[in-house]
Image 1 (tube, rainbow, N blue to C red):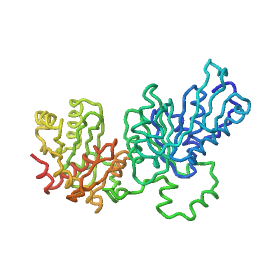
Image 2: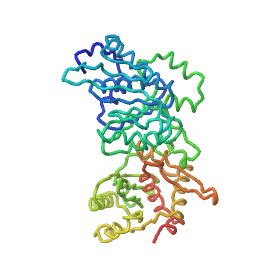
Image 3: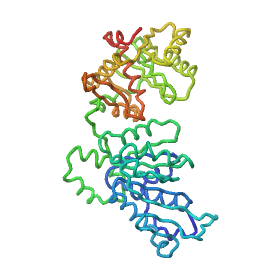
Image 4: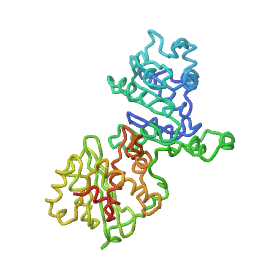
Length: 421
């Protein structure tokens, strides 16, 4: 900060707020319960960005929502505003350093601007080094996809998404993407109302008092509630696979499902024991060449004594499967390719859904893998009534497919007949 830092009255951050602020991720996705302190966090990051010479743009769906951020920034900068060191424009909701004022280090400082933005049109014509999209779950998805992301291209700017969940809409899809990112560019956090150690317990109890169970989960615990298109139910009840060792499964029937990664997808392997009815190992990677992927599969086969491999054969799957069949270790294993089509995919996914519904199989707990299950969607053809299944736009379903393939290899049902060679 600058030599006049004492004139900037930032509020003290609680532990989780500070961890989010300190993260180096370029895309921060924060889903919170009420009174977590997201406005305090957003304004803190914005003011520091302004002092560092950045152009900060904060947007929320309504003027009332933007107003909370605007008031917090003015409160923190009140002394500098009163001293004439920062110019305030209430009409445009803009804060900028006065002409001629130079910060230590020679910088003239940056700006903070607030805008209402329900959709992309509201943001057009602007740009930013730091974009804060508050209450993103209430915005239209195009606010980020069509305008928000492109406005950061010139300077490789940063983006922060803060919101309370509104079921599993586009904001949940973005959070899922952040959780699953392995590059470090995206990162997701979940913050409950209880994380705010500065919040009065009496005030919190007052908020909770008249809430329904669903409202409590969503508004206080920041949990995403199922929407009408949700495919899998009873997910939490099926995330209790025990820690295990290869020795415990010696002589058992072990199956691995493999979903190969393409351009921006992930290669995922899910290993399950048919004898014990639970998942025993997993592997997820991207930007790894196919020779390395094959070596990882060989390692899993040797370690766990895998007896059947169910690899997806679409796209790059066919040539990779041919390589598997030439490998001295894998050539001795039953390899049953599965071609995913509009006909074969529904029964594959529905069988996985039935396993969750009946709590017939236990899977290893993992936030990324569970988020993909929770985000998975069904849509129905209006003319035929037939379902189609997929991840939301911008998200991945690799872990879902790998698990579905693994389970399909444990049956003699129509699945393999639909998808096999």
